[in-house]
Length: 224
Image 1 (tube, rainbow, N blue to C red):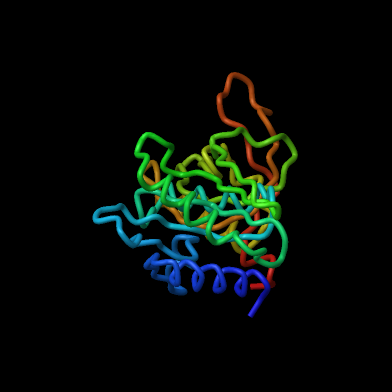
Image 2 (image 1 turned 120 degrees about the vertical axis):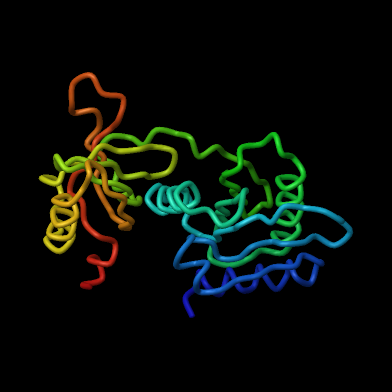
């Protein structure tokens, strides 16, 4: 079990002890990038479930982008939290801060449905929006969602949709797969590939979208 998994399991246990009912499974993590779902708070008769991903990696734009892309493309719950906890271990009181913050988030429908909750070791914390434009040259993760018959398409990362052309796919297996799908697109074809890429910025004239380059499958990083 990794340090991140130990952090996640310890937090779930503490929340359960405090009366928060949760569900978790490998499928939730694999398909939706959700570590657990808070389904019920003790003493609260009605609430909407909240999906939560837990990480000790503060400010990991790539991981956040992958999480947000999954929530927007195939969300399991209406509301979700990307929870960043500073440090490899849970300091005393972190579970109480998370409990209170999740409850506040759940009971305030006017807040954005996807947010970052960052908790520091001194127990200070803050909610942050996910709708922030990624900086040029940043290494990001996202979901390749569709391809056009003419060879261009889009990758969703965070709140952004990045323009992509097949000529910028550097992963041979991914390129062959996308080109094969492209040939039968009418004119668009839906796809679902988790990818890593470099933000090339707005390198095309008169466009609202930033562009993606050096595109590879996430699994390709592990030699698959």
